Amino acid sequence: MRKLTRAVLRRKFIHLMTLVIPIAYIYIDRFPMVIALAILGVSAVIIDFLRLELRPVRKFFYLHFGDLFWKREEHNLTGATMYAVSAFLSIYLFDKWIAIAVLLFLSLGDTAAHLIGVKWGITYLNSEKTIEGSAACLVICLGISMLLPHPDILVLVAGAVVASLVELFPLGVDDNLTLPLISGVAMEILAKQLVVL
Image (cartoon, rainbow, N blue to C red):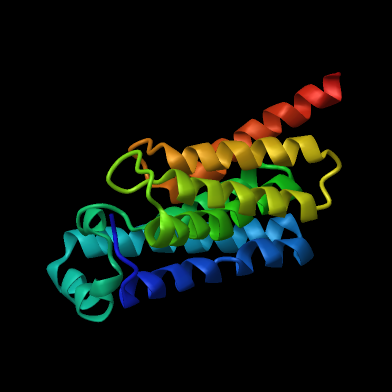
């Protein structure tokens, strides 16, 4: 299990700063958000590929940001790149309030899961995930669900539960990508079913 080192706390602080995207989306129309995030996502992927393929770029990143990288990111895309891509896809694919919800789940719920899991987690499911961390994620995501003005609270609560389960059970893909997309798809499906009923 990771420790709450200064570097990890810096990384989680940066993760919290991603709140600017769902908050901005409350006030900004979908089209400019999609364009801005498409540019951000493509730029992040290109920069990450340059880091992975070109030694000088890799050296620059590890010199200036090396303590922020997880071990798995040495040979894979970073969590920041995965976030940029998932933010674009969430806003492009989902209803506005569902997109806002899943990005808040990721920024706040995922951060809470890590911090609580590392600091107070005792019931491990594997080397990294704890029941306590995932419970913290669920509580935060449910809290977010109660505050958002989506017309059907059941949709948001279901999304909160799915997001927490995705956080708890690793799928072999960075949860910066899987958490918002899987919970968003679940909410979209449920919302459409409720309209039919």
